[in-house]
Each structure stands twice: as C-alpha cells, then as structure tokens.
Length: 162
Image (tube, rainbow, N blue to C red; front, side, top):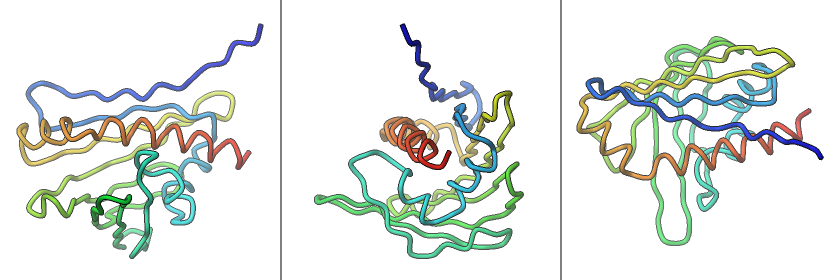
C-alpha cells in the first residue's frame, strides 16, 4: 500500500493581536516556491480559489516595486494592489496588500521560506492589519478557502516544475 501525505494549510490567530499567520509546507525547494510567488506567469496560475481567474495589471517584484491584479469570475471582479517592500530571493518577501472593497485597509505581509530536509520548504505568511475587528472581517470573508485552494493549486504547479 502506498501512503501519500497531503500538506496541510494552517491558519493561526492570536486572540489579542491583529495578526493572521498562514503556515504551509511544500514538496519543493525554497527557490521553486519563491519563484512561484514572484514570477507573474506562475503567480496567476495558483493564487486564490479555483473559481477565480487572475489577471496581472502591474508586477515589479523587486524591493520598492509595485503590483496590482484582478481576480474575477462571471459574476464579479475584485482588485488587489500593493508594494513590494523587501524582496530577498528564496528567503523573504515583505509587501503591503490592499483590497478594492476596503480601500482604507492595508495589511503588511511577510512571507518567510524555510528550507526543510529532502528538498522541501515551509512558508510562514504573517499579515498584520489595523485592528482585531478588521482581522476578524478578513477571516470571515472566506479567505481560508482562497488560501487552502490556492496552495493546493501551487502544489500542482510545483509538481510540474520538478
């Protein structure tokens, strides 16, 4: 019998902090995972839920660069934008993240990539928002579906890059 493992997406919050943390392991190297985050042709293939198509409008994945993309399906469209504050290849990505539906809200997002044995890696994404109320609104928005399905799509993409 062949045993297969499925990487689990963990979404964590601390009750008294306006922080969301997403932890995930991938069966790929930090270099491969980082590339999927910063290469716009790869990014659009995995970001968000399966029901959404992503279109990049701006993408300058370097320290000081900016980005903007739209997620859409037949019945709606939503825009996201931000700035890349630090791009440290294969190790760390720090950016702001704003959503058209909440133009006064911005989160600061830090992604770290940790190498693991066997050519694997762990990502830890930490989002800091203005208040616990905003954090709870984000959690209630269905962002967990987008994160889980997006990472599952990223697993498939990474498997084709091996």
